[in-house]
Image 1 (cartoon, one colour):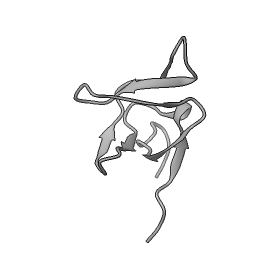
Image 2: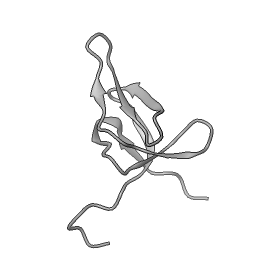
Image 3: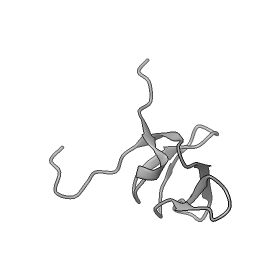
Length: 71
C-alpha cells in the first residue's frame, strides 16, 4: 500500500482534497487563514464545514489540477 502524499497546510488551494479524520476526502473551498491569536490556520470546505491545523502542519492531500500545467 502506498502512503498518502502530504502538503504543508499553508500551501492548500481551493480544489485540493484533504483527508478528513473520518477517512472522507473533503474539497477545500478557501485558502487557509491565520488565527490572530493562535499558531493555527482555518479554511472552509465545499459544503460549509471548516478545517483547522497548526500553521506548520502537513495534511494528507490530493492536489487539484493546476491551470496551465500538463498532467
